[in-house]
Length: 313
Image 1 (cartoon, rainbow, N blue to C red):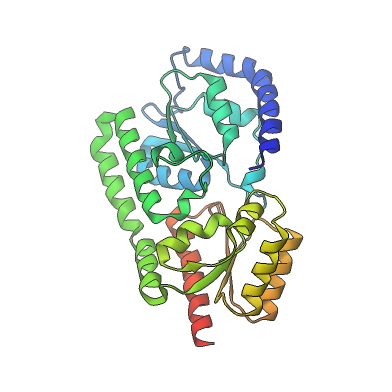
Image 2 (image 1 turned 90 degrees about the vertical axis):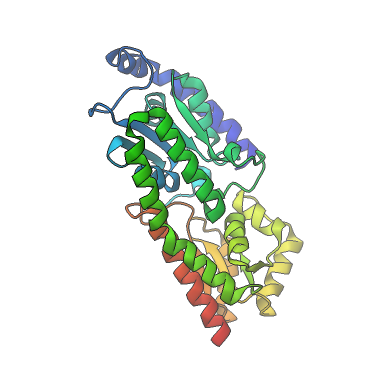
């Protein structure tokens, strides 16, 4: 999320797009140049999600009438560091429906969308949907409220793209909301049982979920934001973070498993030495073959267990 990263990424993307123009032209010729290409199955919408958390949700909504490609899926990389390639450019150029997170999280996708100029393509930008600024905390999928709003928007877009399948999409929408029930229920349970409990997090990824569960996130914002952006946090914020752990002000430490730095490792070691329970969370669906709600529910179970351990320890 560094500005310099985006400038460099923009140059790379321009090169990628230029290098893939011939392939895209040939592919568009095969589809008569009449807008987004279809999959090998007539009537199936080609969907591209910049990240697999949105991809999982739209896949469940669309069911048999969508073919979803999620671009950022690798559990061993930091999504903030993702660099697009020619295949990404081709996938986006040939999609009828593209979902991006926005807020600087996937600027590479927005550049590819702009470069492709695909006729008739529907683009859902979650940041814009939520009326958030381009500089907002981009981890919208950690807010159950934002997830519900986005799922409804996905449903509406699918119906608009293929209105003859409205009944099917409506059934899928109801099924997905039911499947999200345990996830929403556990959020409510944590809020009822541990409301106001002080916790710390190494990154701002946890801010929305802390708010939803009623937890008091006491780690310095300057520290969390800097680590999320791949920067060194202010020295004073590091001192404050250490004190939160040494004084046992924070009952639990939440950390991002996909961002490992010497600083976050040191923080985790300090928490371990102080006997503070830790919870690892990820930015993308892990493992990649499970649903969004299964992934989130598993993380919440870990959080609930750590809060219980702290309360009874």
